[in-house]
Structure formats: structure tokens, C-alpha cells
Length: 463
Image 1 (cartoon, rainbow, N blue to C red):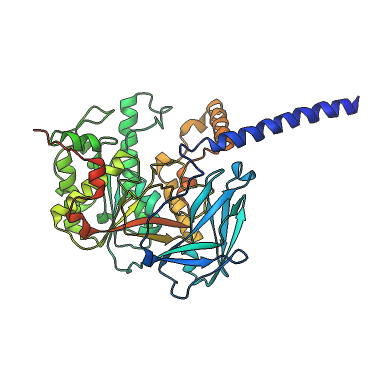
Image 2: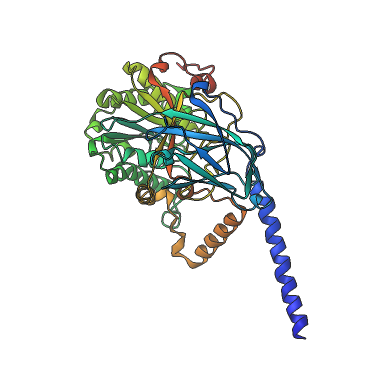
């Protein structure tokens, strides 16, 4: 009798195990809407590339590479069977440090390993330890860029929404106290994050916009920025493309049904707030960005990459910045371009918190950039970035935890997301051992850019 009961219980657990195993194997490979077996493709200048031999999973690094170098190793990988269930990854190990590069569940083909953080330790040999994948090539390609940022550099961060600056570049701007955070919108749209407190949608989204605007103004203070170098322009979330298309006509908030940007702009305390002009239209946006450019005169402007980032507000924030750069007559410095919503997948970067941020999925030569800059984050830097993101109300769990039945539902949803491998919170994606930027010289912006040709091929100015 006991044996029979044991066999029944064993059978039940075995069926549950097989069901979970099948679910993991199938669902985790379905979250990507592109062919994960294709080669990533980037076209680099041959003077920035070198062939290296991978001998017993070890690479000897050339002597001319060291601190201040951004470098990638191009390898060809093939996920094992277990790599469809667990995140395939390669540990990169030097004498004094280690980083981990993660890939798609079941991913195969040419991929890029970011070894930049190891070069900060002047590594001469790097060991590659594969987990849930196999490296297919014995000869690999090293791609490298020399770039260091002088400590006195003035860095302007363009943040389309409250929290974008922190997600993309908190580690960077916290090391350069002479930085300026310019947030474009109040970020009032999105989920009803506080619907248990404010059932009225107008009241809810007004309060949400106010809270997020205050977040954007206060959190950079944690990194030591001057209060005069923090500004939110107060434009409406999700409207930048419409502002571009309808210029010079003002655009209404999608939810609040008002065109008065003063309801959020008035929360600023920078001395520049009294110089802000205009209404919720494109010309006003460009003029106000130019105001900041004229005041701050940045050496580096950090902004979303219009071709790599899928969010229209991110794309058009950068287009407005480019227009303002031309109007201001800037011809020196560089654009550092980032992506918080990659066009190929919202799950990039892959893998766990603390992994490296490397080159994202790409299958053509359309992405425009001249070089790449990887900014290393120590473990302490990453902890500080966690605190910065945690201080952003919109990135934290909503107020459902106050009600036990809603807490149970929230727990169930998180377990389901974890099983499917669909965890794409910014605490997983943004807390990495580096921050990554694609670099374009500002002097190139005198002519029409590939960004404008892609996004605004036939613009018509309304009368």
C-alpha cells in the first residue's frame, strides 16, 4: 500500500516536473520576436579591429589596450539544450575581476562580449567560461575604441521621461558633478499606478505627473548635482511626435485634456525656470532646449538613439535636441546615444542584474554611430544606482501590497512572469556592470542626419 502511494505521488510530481520543463523550454524561447539564431551584424572600421586566437578558452590582450579602452570580442555561440531554459552566458575572468555576458534563451550566432570593464584593471589575459552554450570559433575578432572623458567635462543628459536619465546614465553623471539633467516630459501617462488611492483618473494622472516631475528634479541631487542644473520642461507624456507633426499648434495632454504645461513646469526650482517660454508645441520645445544649451554649453550631450530606441518620445527628444544644437550653433563635442527601449526587444539587456551591457541585437548597417563608449560601474556604483531607481515612484511596485487579496494576485503574476522568463523590470535591465553609449560627433549634425531621414522623411509644417 505504501509503495503504491509512493508511486502515485512520484507520478504526480514527475508529471508536474515535465509540464514545468516543457513550459520553460517553449515559453522562454517565444518571448523574442526576431530570429535568435541569426548573427548580430555591426560594421566597424578595420583599423579598430584585430584578430585574436582563443587558446584553451583564454585570450591574450594586446599591450596597447588598457584603461580608457572600450572593447568587444566577437564570438560565435551555440546554445545547448539547457540554454533554452537557463540564460546562456559567458563569464569573462581576468586576474583581478570578473564580468558576465548574457544572451537570449536558445540564442546562437555571432555575438559581442564587452570586456571594457576588465581593461580598467589593465588585464593582459582573459579567460572565457561558457555556461549553457558552446563557443564555435577558435579565432575571434577584437573591436576596440580609445575614449576617456576629462573630469572637468560638462555633460548634459536628455531624459524624455522622469527616470530615463537614471536608467541610462546615473553611473555616468554621478561621476561628473558638473552635469545637467534636462527632463522633457512629466511622465503622467501609463498604468494607473495609484488607482487604489485615486479612483478618479484625472486626479490620478495629475498626481502621478506631479510626483514623477518631483522625482526627476530631486533624485539627481543624490549624485551631487547642483539644483540649478536640474530642470523638467513639463511637456506631456506621449505627445512629442504629435507636437512635431502639428507644429506650431499646441497639443493637449492625452489624459488630462489640457494644453497648460505650467501644471508640471511650475514645480521646478532651478533659476532657469523663469526663462522657460512657449506652449505645448514643437517650436517651444526646441527653443527651451536651446535655452539650456546656451546656458550650459555642454561638451557631451547624452540622449536616446533615435534608431535603436523604439519609444517615440525618446526618438523625438533627440530630434528636438539636434534641431536646438543647430540653432545654438554648437559644432564641438559629442552625442552619447543610449537605448532604454531597444527596437528589437524590450528584454534587452538579457540575463541577471549585474551582467554586462554589450552590443544589442542588430542585423543591418542602418544604425548610425562612429564609436562606442562603455562606462564601467563598480559594485558600489551599482548599489547607488539601485537606490536612485528605487527613489523613482513609477519604478516601484504599486500600492496593491496594502491589500492582501491584491498582494496574492501580484505574487501570482510575478511567479508566472518568472517562469516564462519575461522579467523586464529596470532593476534587472539597468543595474549592470557598465552603461553603454553610441558616439556621434556634434559637428556632423550640421547636415541632415540618418535619424531625421528615418523618422521624418516628408515633414509638412502646418499653418
